[in-house]
Image (cartoon, rainbow, N blue to C red; front, side, top):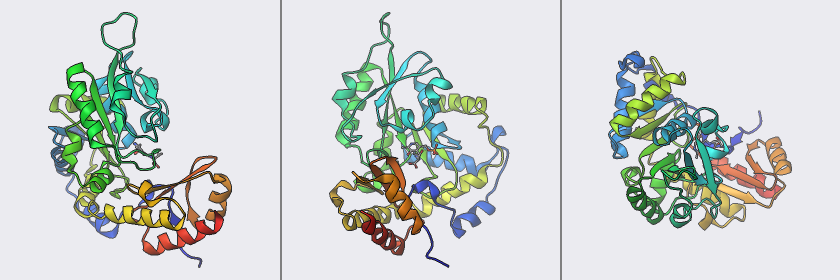
Length: 335
Ligand SMILES: Cc1ncc(COP(=O)(O)O)c(CN[C@H](C(=O)O)[C@H](C)O)c1O
């Protein structure tokens, strides 16, 4: 029996722990379409409160959380403006256009880092009969293709302050907002209060098997519940999933700092500047990604190919120190 596989492809690969499975099995459940699942209600209320918003909605994926979140603040034929490498326009299969008729326009950022002035300069006003109106700006924190970069609070604040005057909404793709808050030493509500709609993933670093929560005003979440049902996302006794999310919030949030430490350790061992590692991702640039990925797989280490010359490593709950050491040794021998 060879060594166990070290899976650094993503923090989406985590499996429920025994404790989480017990919480899932014991969860009190009901039919959530009738609003009778107490565990889902508890999770939605808790996450909304964590981010300083009035209400929350459990959705099956971060993609659905983002897409409904954007639809709440952007009408068909209007546009959402975002970073060219944002997940919402890179990995969500064109859903904004395909499902909601929302136009998206992008700016090329520096490594995913939010530049409020750059975005503000691109916003197009409502009411001009020549221009597609920019209804919302989507920001991503931490930034996936930016290598887990934590957005500067000053830029988020600047964008938010401007957006209140300009009447433009802000959507936060907070799939890994947990990692950003732990890395920055900030409260989740500090970030939550700088966005009109926020989608946060339970199924990544927090280690739940399924689910995200969209938070916003009560009025918007009521509309979101309707959109979710239209998309076939109305769920029944999904309290078994919500229980995993609650368990994750109770037991897996603080430990994210360990994933960040593991990522820095990997970086050091692989000749990547640890200062460039802000959360749980390490980016290997200028490598023959397919060759390295295949050779690493043959030695039990799985990685993501972001491009033909770029590999992404993501640390998470299911990769311990021994796994990090083994992955570092295998990858160092291939670089
Ligand atoms: C910033 C961000 N926002 C949203 C999502 C979507 O979450 P899901 O739809 O997969 O639950 C992801 C998933 N990211 C996945 C990964 O990193 O392995 C893949 C790329 O889709 C994300 O990284």
